[in-house]
Image (cartoon, rainbow, N blue to C red; front, top):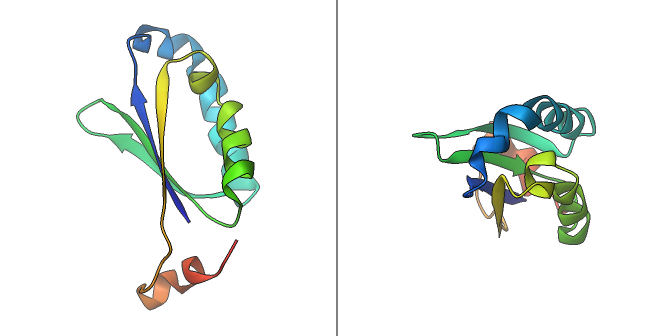
Length: 97
């Protein structure tokens, strides 16, 4: 499982122009089952994604397709978690990729 932080870079001003493409990229991640949660980092410092069910290299390839990443609107911080405990509602996150 991965926590991805997408922190705005100095190129943040390009975000509005690329927002439709970024949202389409997020939608595809959810449709493919790769993403299980996405949202904004407050106060307006970027976004975060919880990804599951793939290898690190596969996830990196997916992240490179995000228009925000490609245009350096955000910088990626990727954190891998090996879940040891989870609420019963989130037990599916404990399965390996």
